[in-house]
Length: 194
Ligand code: FNR
Image (tube, rainbow, N blue to C red; front, side):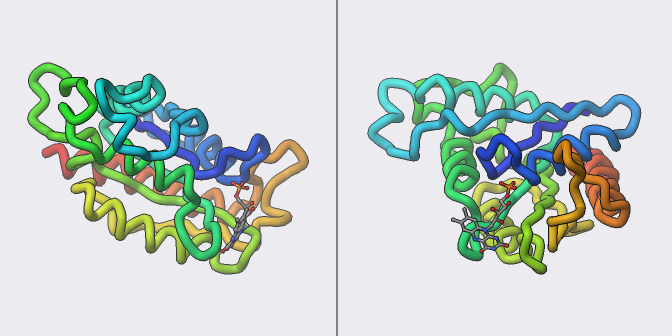
């Protein structure tokens, strides 16, 4: 199973990126997790959709078209979804054809997010561990037609002290929570596919 990871933080030392790295170590046999960059996407502007989507948009969409599941590491900015992540979702939510590019052959879905199984994780220094942003993210994804996994959820709050000097997630309960989401997402994706 091919899982695409998106990280809502563009920071080089992002703790949310570290959650995705941890998740990559917990995959069952046969599953791979590849993180797709979103830092080079232009800000959503419908004027940029003609004659064709900008190349970074097309690249993100190609990644998502090949995915069987999506794992999003969602930071929290001012109690909501960080702009880079919302921007990526907005670009990915546009119907094929609008940006002068057609869907892969044999693909009936109109967007790469439609019916895509999605799991959500997140971490922040605050106690709520991005719970508010994750709720907003669920609301937005619902309107894209993505199949957001109801649970398990993972809120890695009070992040300081849960990562080592190299920036890797070391807190065992947090690693276990990420592991539950990874296992849950693989099972959810199989159910959605069947
Ligand atoms: C934050 N941060 C933050 N944290 C939180 O728990 N709730 C919040 O509402 C906010 N708001 C917020 C706004 C802005 C503009 C910034 C830049 C930051 C702190 C944020 O969670 C922290 O910087 C995390 O470390 C971001 O995740 P990465 O970059 O480590 O993945």
